[in-house]
Length: 397
Figure 1 (cartoon, rainbow, N blue to C red):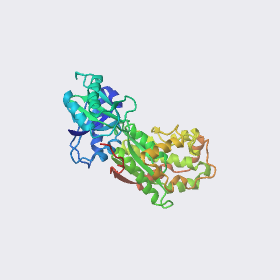
Figure 2 (figure 1 turned 60 degrees about the vertical axis):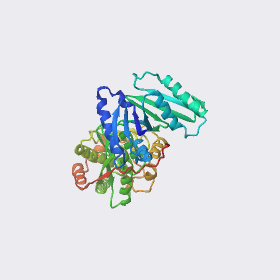
Figure 3 (figure 1 turned 45 degrees about the vertical axis):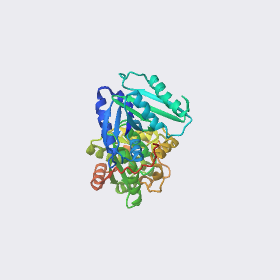
Figure 4 (figure 1 turned 120 degrees about the vertical axis):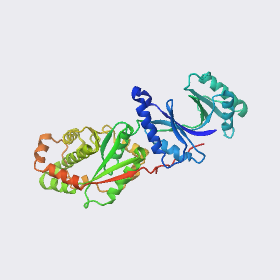
């Protein structure tokens, strides 16, 4: 029997006339995710994507990569049989007989409604073969072994395990966003959440070299590398921020500095977004988490740009954010020691209830546009390519 991965998706099915666009993008992303690994072909069929394997295809690596493709609900390492019931019964028994179990059930799905047998009839016919030959018991709830059977188009697939995917929408189907990326816990999680909704992320990191160490840049590269497992190619803008901070410190009150830093970052990110054709900015802000993230301060910070600012974490607490960071693999990197540009020159008592007109008056002391343009001239860009470096899960055969 030929080996396949049968990949299922759900949300895309609800897209109506736009469904072919999403399915095509999902297939392209599956192909990108599997680059460098041996397989035979990728094909779309009714509500599924089939990855046909070769004899030398590594199941563990392919499964681990497919589990990170946004848009897939789950993927299943499967065997292809035929729709003739007698052959299907024999093929199922060949796969079941080497396995150790005392209870089992058959779980059949009939996507091809022209197939003459109902799902219940298939369960009974296939289950009877397994029961009589193995001598084991059928148990519909909590069996030791579940045998899945999928009848779709002219295929019949048999499998025993569903690998959970990350759901969402295929990356790049929703347009570009610019993510303000620090080395902390929050911004990588915010980036993950917008990737899950089909966005492609362009990353912007503000650094204060030489006042901070080069290790802080390496940390951001590592974080972006993890996220690149989900979007396959990433660009980072490294923007020097030390000179802007120096001018803010020289000409403005201490308590307003963090807000002024953030407003400058929004202006710089907006310029980069225009260059990249991005439609929104993304931050890891959460209401009340730090002094700059009160509602009043967020409103004042948002005023610095005309682009929408997406804040995927706005209503989440730290424990919820950390849980996602652990799950996606960014947490161990985020907690490494680093020097953040915003931690420099931070006042003891920062403003928590900023007024827009007051901040604008203070900001008028600065030559904002020349400051922004000079920083843009000095920024550098880096590209991180997909490495598939997070493959660690084994797959039962």
